[in-house]
Length: 317
Ligand code: FEC
Image (cartoon, rainbow, N blue to C red; front, side, top):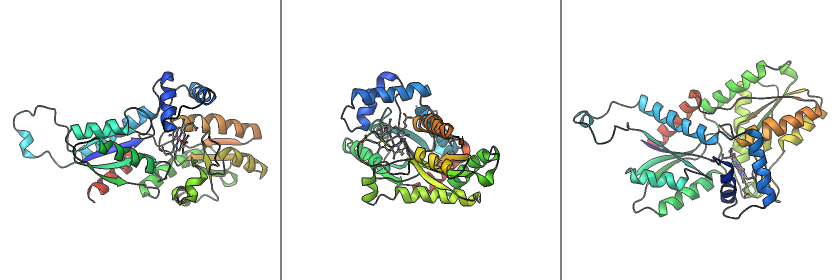
């Protein structure tokens, strides 16, 4: 089994911020002001761990797929093969905006003789501004190859029972730390997208709502809301409500405690450490709201099991 696991990617060093941001802007270099602002955000969190987490997710997924794979075929039990046996499952990593790029991953797969593979983006929800763009990058990479690779896509998995259980488990840990769970507010977040995409029929907000609804139901939460975070620095309108606006509104409504869970991303990165842990936390403190954030899934085994389940089902399609 072959898998292409994809995530957003992050620069490894400050000098990589400019080409990274230029790639996000589809080749248009952002202004000095925007570059400076982004560099400051990275500086304040120290470093985004996204690349490392993505790599560990891939390694663990590969290990789990191989652990439970059928025994190696007899022919491999003769003289030593020229390469160490790779096991029947190989997981490749490609990132949308940095290295290894999706193009580099697809080229490596081709070099290794892969002709069929499962493609999956770590983020659980489909969007015209996420999964559709990852697909474009895979298709562009395929055009450069002499032979095709057939990709079976996992396009979204917003209601996977394992995903819901994994989110609920981490939300419950945050709930244990509340002074009064019955009187707290519960907010699920995802990355905002431009409103224009929603108007073109993007299923993203519906899928985000679905995840939130299922997690809330599993824990019998008395109430919940969905908010969007990390809207891009572009003039167009972005999907709301913005998490910071919602926090102010919750305080006005009389709430004193709120639990926030980012269900749009499985891993910790800039948008979690800066936009939630620094920015939203500062908003909450300023209005007198106690904000607790549920920890992320990262490369924990309960989440890797979900990925395993998804890629195995796709492989059999
Ligand atoms: O840790 C890191 O360094 C990377 C954190 C990161 C993740 C992420 C995920 C998503 N984005 C999505 C949509 C957009 C759209 C634009 C956009 C822009 C940025 C910028 C940075 C950034 N995003 Fe992101 N996103 C992350 C980081 N994102 C940095 C550029 C600065 C800014 O505008 O804030 C606008 C593009 C444009 O300018 O035209 C749209 C979506 C996701 C969730 C799915 C996924 O993970 O792929 C949707 C992580």
